[in-house]
Image 1 (cartoon, helix red, strand yellow):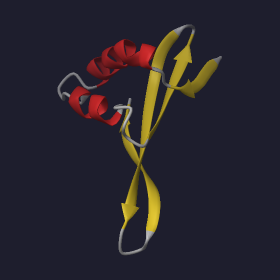
Image 2: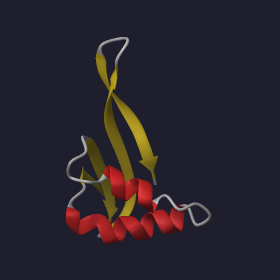
Image 3: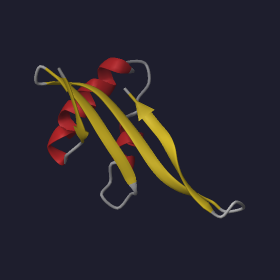
Length: 78
């Protein structure tokens, strides 16, 4: 069964491995690390299967100034 939960700081090493394996021709780690900064408004969820981290998704918040709304953007997905 797949477990989905918010990511924690202790998951970052496994996240690095996941992104390296998923995107071996593109280095997304600097972007992922900057988005996971505790000062950022981000929702980070991981998928775990049989004890292994198998997926990750980020949602970031931003303002749409002309519309006066706050929205969520889908960030890197592995």
